[in-house]
Amino acid sequence: MAGHLLERITGGASGDLLDWVMDELSSLKNYSWPGNVRELEQSIRQILLTGRYLPQDWSATPKESSEEMVDAIRKGTVTAESLLHTYASHLYETHSNYETVSKLMKVDRRTVKKYLRH
Image (tube, rainbow, N blue to C red; front, side, top):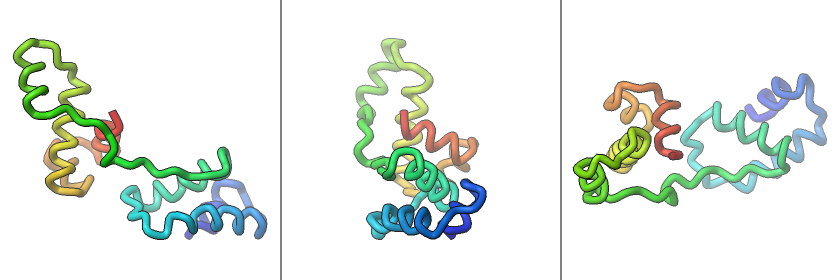
């Protein structure tokens, strides 16, 4: 699959280029690839541009606690972006699935990922 995506990106990649990309991807053997094929394609693009791919660690994203969010709502200081990030994070922690969260929030799966990156 990576070879096909690399050819599509470059218009016809050499064997050496494919070997290099595959070497970089081999360091991600235990990575779950939550973005599936789209994420694989973006990882190849990032390797071509920067020489490496570092997946986003969603668990390391700081999150506001429920109490802080309620307090901010009461004070009128919460932003829509912050509210959506906190809600999406809560749903993702509960369901561990972008598709489920997108259905619950009634937004596209890519929008859920955007809110989780906030």
